[in-house]
Length: 466
Image 1 (cartoon, rainbow, N blue to C red):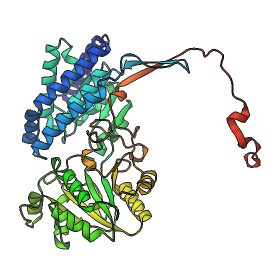
Image 2 (cartoon, rainbow, N blue to C red; image 1 turned 180 degrees about the vertical axis):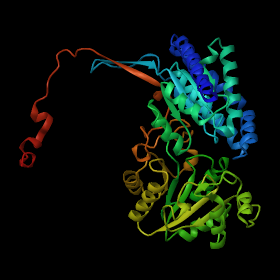
Image 3 (cartoon, one colour; image 1 turned 60 degrees about the vertical axis):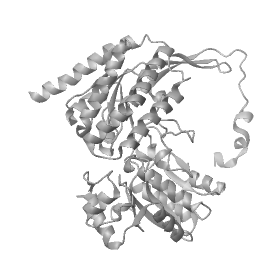
Image 4 (cartoon, rainbow, N blue to C red; image 1 turned 90 degrees about the vertical axis):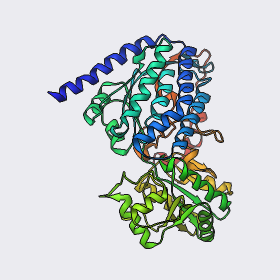
């Protein structure tokens, strides 16, 4: 009986959200944009408070990094939506006589991870309101207090703006059963989190945007600025203590500069684990084949101490030397820790093969990076890696999801394409929160091309018909 009552509470939330969304359908483009801007400005000013709430509840990462992420995402998403069209006529193609009209998707079910329990809420709602949608959040049990607080504060903001508060709602006492029920009742699911959550979203029968696991691999070749490469990998590690899915997890280094890169990494705060320390670290980072929640996203000194060895206080990240990939080499997978696995390669084809093999095991389709000044090599790498994003000479963990020094759309959801079992390989943005109606008119004085113009030399190729 209790289960039935719990699930009926989800149906009640969906009913309230649908009523609010129906009211929001009357918003103009500028009214929707102003609502999104209000959420962004509110989040920017609540960043310190929400960051502290998150750290207090989860104990993971670094408070200042969380503040920076909230503020940069609020500003960045506003940059991307400032002139975006999501309401009414959003595009016209006069040559093809096509008009596109933006319409809401309806009620969005947002699955919130423990790693970013505040950010996913306000970012998702900025995108959702731009499309005149409602959103219901399903928090992670270990971060539900923060998520619920952020949802309630945005509800208060909506009330002050004379918008329906129920445009954003939250499951207050989350469970797997409630999350599954939510996914079946909403119109769109946006799943941010681990692979089981994403798989569940895709199996729900509801259209879904999921994100694959992150396990970023970067290549450092002999043309790179080695100090700059080491410093940028260090910068990514210290960004919320590697909590982000885009954080560098492995570096594949040309053997001729390997020792020099090692020196630069140590100069950038890394601690090189010896064989005994590596074994201790492995048995601590993974328990029963899964990452140990007690040590992920923690300072390097804390992780080392838990593993049974002491490192100097000025060491801020750990490096281990590795040769293989796959289940027998867990360091080749995602670590959610300030731990980077180092590999050597001899020729560039070997580097590409190694990156693809590592990511076939973990992080398929997500992202990779390269530190090189050879543009032809960078293009080859981008063409031959099975990845959705390639960051060039940047800290991948601070560039993939949007930053002011590159043109990637700001987001919190990174699609991994079919490589990672996702429907999209793009950064999920406001564009994914609308339906589009195509209006087609007759093209006057059209001309049908000849077969010669269409098929060219194929028409005379004997191989076509044998």
